[in-house]
Amino acid sequence: MFLTDKRSGHLVEVLDLHELMDPMKDTFKGRYNWGQELPDPERFSKADVRFESGEELPQCWVDVHYRDKELRR
Image 1 (tube, rainbow, N blue to C red):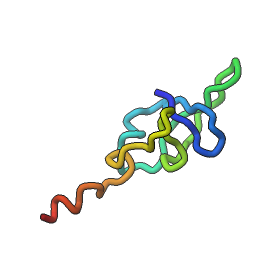
Image 2: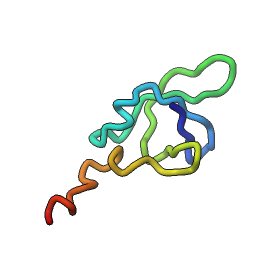
Image 3: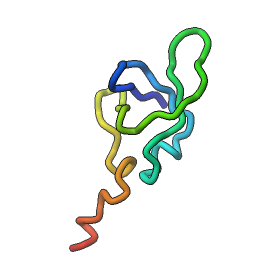
Image 4: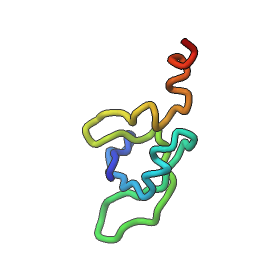
């Protein structure tokens, strides 16, 4: 899966989908996708990426408390 870095606009290859989807983690393992040689993996903040379509990551991937208000009813 590829995401876009909000600051640079470069594509980021997600190397660990479980980390990306885990709302308890603020970062995930990935690497920029450019050049002929792939760069070394690094940590990316979920707040700094979005889908290639321009959509933000789903709340359930970034906020562990995204349904708390519904549960209090």
